[in-house]
Image 1 (cartoon, rainbow, N blue to C red):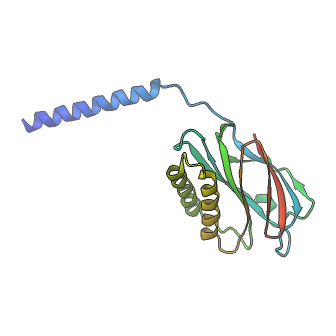
Image 2 (image 1 turned 90 degrees about the vertical axis):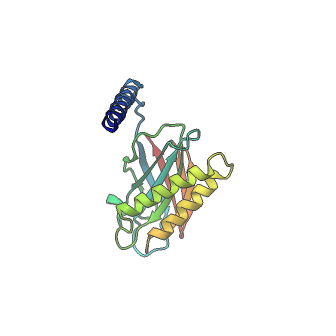
Image 3 (image 1 turned 60 degrees about the vertical axis):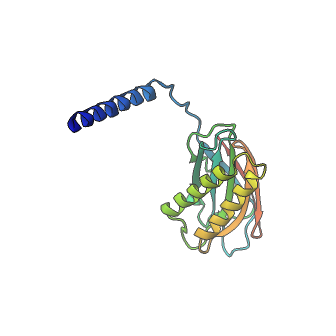
Length: 192
């Protein structure tokens, strides 16, 4: 009898797996959205650090209607490492996050790198997880974006050792953002 119960359980499990698999395959494919890009970086004024700046960006993207639909990415400094001065405009046109719908919102932070990369892949994953958890906890609250900005600012502080936090922003995917802080000002255009 025990053997028959095990066979029945295994058969049901396999049948359930097959049904689940067919439902997944039968559902329409998720629409592919364009990649969010850092299109232009305009240094209005360098930060107060010695030497040329090395700006980089962390971006959390989220659906305003689905707390489970989020994404996170980092871009830079790349070729901008120790290469940005006052009044310069650079056009990296570089992907920061793939598949970001235009109706999502973004929480971003600009940092200025000093003495090499401070963020490991594990630390970036921890920041991403914290942002996701914060969004889960605050979804539907009118102060959700304020809390997300505070979390990103705090996490960047926790995981960077000598990099400077410039500013956070709440914005749409196709926008120009002004970051002012640490003695500097940047206008950064995000888009597709």
